[in-house]
Length: 396
Ligand SMILES: Cc1cc2nc3c(=O)[nH]c(=O)nc-3n(C[C@H](O)[C@H](O)[C@H](O)COP(=O)(O)OP(=O)(O)OC[C@H]3O[C@@H](n4cnc5c(N)ncnc54)[C@H](O)[C@@H]3O)c2cc1C
Image 1 (spheres, rainbow, N blue to C red):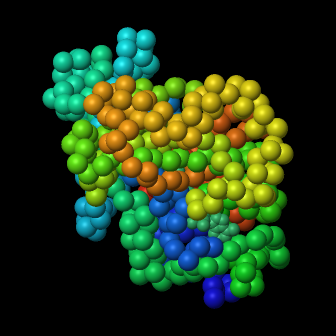
Image 2 (tube, rainbow, N blue to C red):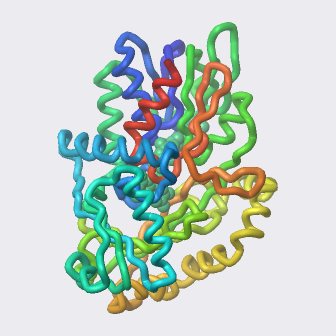
Image 3 (cartoon, helix red, strand yellow):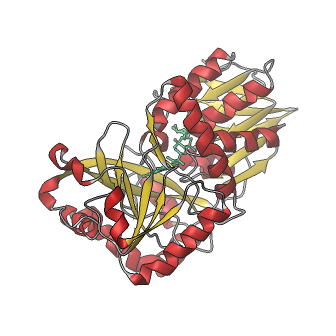
């Protein structure tokens, strides 16, 4: 049972909610903080189903929240992992241009990375690529030695220990339904009854729009779920990839494209795809209410009109493993369908505007006595410590 009258309630025990609770307790040791999580496990949704890449800050528009919080948050999180013995490895990554047509976009990435202060960036000529990734082909590449891999769910568990050690509580199996003002408190209703807090921070990932609306917030933007599926490289073929190999992404999309990731456990994943999904829940393929919400949102059709070609490619990747492998083989010509096995999947909580725009930057909005994290896609896990500071400043 959660406390009935904590000072602050944080909804959602993903990496963001836990980082926020931890930061608030560090600043205000006397205050009581309750984290309410509907699942029985911490970090069960996006935090436990992602590429595990600690991004260095290359992609993001200089001056954006993503650029600032990622470049601040990544080294801090890496240091935290090293201090707490959480698996993390800084093996660096390559962004590879396949032909000269992609080079101007690679130039722009390099420009952004330098403007954002990403350390150690180095441009590689075609013949230098093999020094880093002997099996990868391309005409040009950008190497980022600061990029790392971590286990974000393990980080979230460690954050939860910090919260409890500082006197906070993390209550799992507690689903929040709504919130409204009563006298000078925010009354948060959940499946165990209700808790009344002076303030609440909603970090509910794929359900953030529904809870914001239930607390009196704007329905725009809406969350649309994008399913990302990976293939696993067979153990005997993992030597095709040393660290991280990424394509040059489409600058108009918030997704980075199908990449190769060697994780902290040495597993090599290929993916993720990015297909509009039938459910917000990482464990389900279809949920009627989620479908209804996606289809009832005007932005969905505007987005579909603009991105239908990309959607068809994603559909092909999702439906046919060989199509995904063919795409990967443009970077690693030795890769064949026999080298891969089915892999995990996760669901991205992507905010979509009424005008059909995929919201790129992080969004934190307000209702009375509450803050709502309305868009925290990648690199939010990387940025979690810095994003938590920004949110704690606003709570204060
Ligand atoms: C395929 C994929 C690849 C990615 N790759 C990377 C990467 O390489 N690097 C990176 O930095 N980021 C990556 N991300 C993004 C990253 O995973 C997210 O930005 C981050 O995990 C967001 O954390 P969160 O706490 O906001 O969300 P979540 O982890 O989804 O947590 C939200 C929590 O709120 C809970 N909740 C929801 N509704 C309620 C309710 N009503 N009551 C109580 N609890 C509720 C949920 O159960 C959940 O535990 C990736 C994401 C995906 C899906």
